Structures are given as structure tokens and as C-alpha cells.
Image (tube, rainbow, N blue to C red; front, side, top):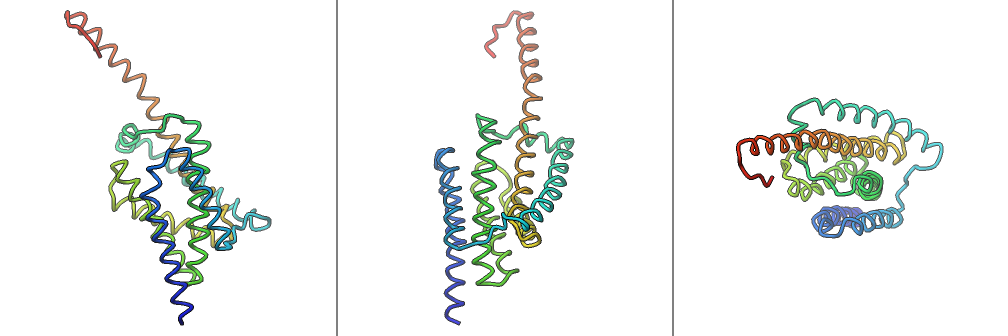
Length: 232
């Protein structure tokens, strides 16, 4: 009984620390944050001896399930860009200065790898031991949702909506990992969602840029015709 209580306390402490870290990490420079988060995730996997399922035959099952789920998610995100409200939100989003660095390093390493090994591997493993499989999945999903509070505040997104959506996403990622026995399934799905969202935001903003400059040029011409000075 004491062992169980101690394990539960340890698990809750780890979950609390991960949520707390989400408020601290944004203060680090982007490059350093990617390295630290990826490294901490790897250390947590080693410390908790979490199985990743990244070797055959579990790897093949994870790749199959993750590819299917990721394709569905990416298609849904691409289709959502036809909704005016979604395009408006994407057009106002502040994007990183380096698109290649964002797409090739920050998302796959600093976000997908770091979050999956931290929440779906390390926290889910100790959570399952302390609270059972369902309890462990619920704990990691809850912590995952709460860890996005700082992101929601920084981007101006609805706080409760962000926490709820990412919490549900964390639960589904955990289900994919349990279903396939491999972390490859949630990693591929997570990667597809983030990359599709990033690519859509980049496409929307680049599509609007020529129009924005055309409007400015048009306004300059009108003002010159009317004899006004223009410093736009």
C-alpha cells in the first residue's frame, strides 16, 4: 500500500514538473529550447525505462497505424483552410523567421520527439504502473493539455479550448501508442498534424503577401494622383 502511494506521488510530481516546465521553456532561445527539450525527453525515457517500440515488428505496426491516422489528420487540416475563419486565424499567426528550421528541426525534434517521449512514453509508463493503463493515459493527456497553457496565452488562443483540444489529442496519441505497441504511431500522427498546420499557415500568409503589397502600391498610386505625400 505504501509502495503504491509512493509511486502515485512520484508520478504526480513528474506530471506537475512537466507542466511547470512548459511555463519556463518559452523563455529559452529557440535553438537551445529544442536541444534541452529533446535531451530531457531522452533522459526521462532512460530513467523510467520506457519501452518505445521502435524496433520490428512493433515498429511496422506503429508505422502503419501512424501513417493512416496522420494522413486523415493532414487531409482534415488542409480542408479546413477553405473555411474563412480558419484562414483568418492563420493569416494573423506570428510565424518563426526561418521556415526550414521550423519545419525540419523545431517541429520534429523540439515538439514531436520531445513531447512524445516525455508524455506518451515516460509519463505514461510510470502512470500506468501507479494508476493502471487507463489512469496513466488519462494522466499524461491531462498533463499534456495543461502544458499548452503558456502557448495559448502567447498566441492569444482560447485557454480552455486549447487545453481541452490538446488534452483530447494527448489521449488519442496515447491510444495509438497502446494500440500499436510503438511510439511511432503517435509520433507520425503528431508530426502530420503539426507539419500540415505549419505548411497551411505558411501557404495562407504567402498567398496574402502579394495581395497586401498590391493594395499598398495601389494606395500609393491613388495618393500620388491626388497630390498627397505617401510614406506607406
